Length: 221
Image (tube, rainbow, N blue to C red; front, side, top):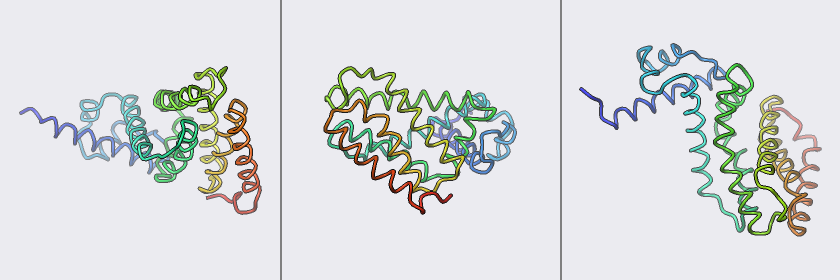
């Protein structure tokens, strides 16, 4: 008897949740398909039949996490494209810290044997989102009109990624993570922002740097 679409969706969801749980438990994505099947309590063939290869499963795990992030973005408030962009960068910290063990495992996976699968999936999901923010800010005149959205988006993604990597490697507490993200994103954008917004970001950078230099922020979490 053929399974209903609802049953198939529930079983696929169960397998994705099992993969996410393994990432939390292991601290990376180095689990085997046999381990995934055992963790989910299904036959060895079921993950292949329902989701596909290990690469496809990791892509779906990243996609699912991105969906949760964009769900949070829908509740984001901002008076302008640039304000929403900065709010989205702040939301990265909130999102990662909400499931710290999972995201640290996912980021660690991006720099191990599974790097191409995880890192490429993360890049694909993120580029369109961040470039949309950049394009809107250019059109609004908040970023200078010579700005090419694609290269600036690449620089922005690298800035966000490097902060996340340091959060992983140095085990920053949430406060340090948030301040470092604020500084890196604003440094990336300030030089190409309109004068008034550049001045505002410069003040925010100085304030965040002063807090980072304080004794509390340097402690590991």
